Length: 93
Image (cartoon, rainbow, N blue to C red; front, side):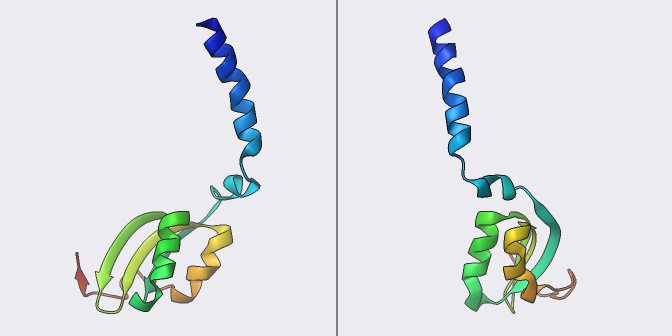
């Protein structure tokens, strides 16, 4: 049992060393963004799901409205689609 604890303790630093530098940056969020992404830009919705924290998602006539916390390194990709939270009133769920 003691040997197992020693193995775990010796493995943890190796795992932490192998984490990419971007892993630390991923937790630095610029704040909350409200965006209305056209349906033709599903790639940006996917990006928000992969790199951000989705707080709200609504499907409207115009596209997908997201309230999302994004890392600083990715927020600029959603910025052109920023809107007021009340921008779209027609929603389906």
